[in-house]
Length: 81
Image 1: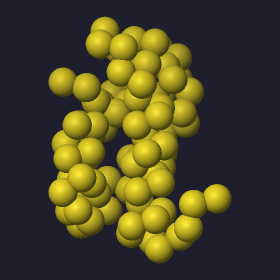
Image 2: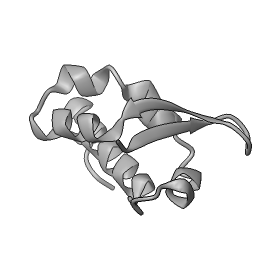
Image 3: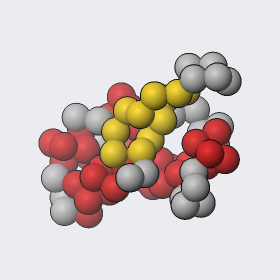
């Protein structure tokens, strides 16, 4: 299962949320569930360390950017730049 990672230094990481579940919530329009993970989504540094360690080659940083865009547009009412 692919997960978003919140990295605490170069040697340790811990799973914070199931990325597939977050995308499913966004696609289904479940704003409350996505809002419940706002801190996790915006705490990602986009360093791509998780991508380097992902055995499936998932482009996690791009997925996090997509979730941020969703939150900004659909939840907070901000236009894309």
